[in-house]
Image (tube, rainbow, N blue to C red; front, side, top):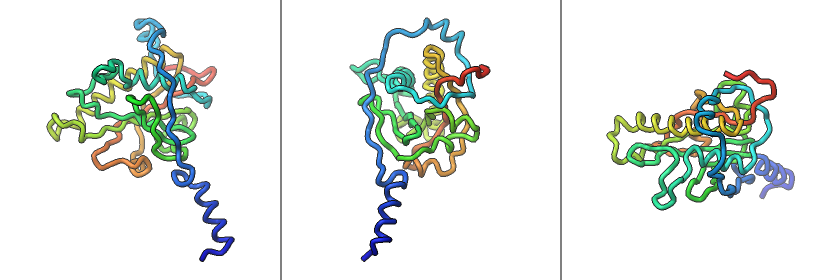
Length: 218
């Protein structure tokens, strides 16, 4: 039997360990706003990459709009999405990394499904800004969903489909006045942290947030 001291230490360990006692809860998102925004040609004119962010959090409404624009359901009658995918495989999942924890976007339920507690934003890229931006999006392809594709072509299709989603997010950010940047990441250890299956592959990352005041735009 554990002594009172050891028992207290064990309880403390569980309380502070990410992904254990501090399990995340699912987050229901507000209904995305599907009207409004800037005209398309103006959005294309303003689309840019930004690498300096304010640490201010995104509201639930902005996050809902952002994720829906990226890969939400725009035709409920057949569950088709705002971005195309090869043979309608819908193989790309958006993992949402925040200071509170990591979630996966459930487009059908319009919610964030919990993956793991703890802040792993710093592990989503090698650049300093990944620690500041309030949200990092990881695009994860489940190659097993590409059932109609040849095995040697699956990662190729997944990369193309990720590009469609990422560009939707770029355009939403240009319309909403947000900053974003696509960046390479160090994949070592991330599949374990995200509890990925062998057939799931991390394609790339995209940091999103409010622009830092006075930051230069590129």
